[in-house]
Image (cartoon, rainbow, N blue to C red):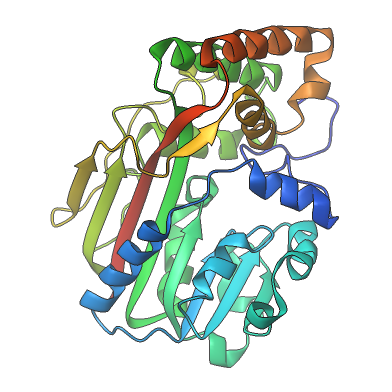
Length: 326
């Protein structure tokens, strides 16, 4: 962010500023899509802990509602909330009418959901999903709001996916260089309004969300599932930041952690253009900040294209934190 800009830059969110349906279709297409097995795992946890009712789900950080629409296949009513008004405006244009009639969208920060005007009949939430935004939130305040909205025996499911993982280590190395250089174009972070968000995000990702505590006074049966976290959850290397950060572990004594290496998990067939589109969606406004140095990114993209040789399987580091509301 430039020193003269008044725009609040936050990581992996504010790149998405369009409002037309085609923009959001491209945005969704640039992101990995969770497998149906992922949602089944969440629902199986929900069914086997506490109260297994599946009446109301809430997707926090819903964007244009693509994950909320996935939840509508399982739950009678779905709320989608986000701070991005343009994303919420686009959602009705992208979701089929039969699902849309069972969905409600609310503009609100996660920490303020209790007073956001959610209809009373939709406040007694069975499942609350936090999609790709928890590292940016004030975690204690957000969890307090979630605890209020979720009924006793209901489920919170917090997940985040990170960088793509390639079959060839050469491609991994090129990606790391490209993502780190792109992040450097956005500097400085220190001394800007967005610094607290960048610090939260960096700490959360380098900690694989273990810095987010689910207090035993409010939550039970906490499970932390980590897929392919032998690779970083961070999108780029620490060299892309202008501050230091370190992993923080606030896991509770009873938390259960599952570490899984599965290179078929969330597998997608991507080429260099798909990787570039993903980076464009993750890093806000970097092309304007790069100026003539954008040529460096183009050169690295061509290097990646040659190394990939067309489409190849990529997967992702993914973390899912589950808890039952007491």
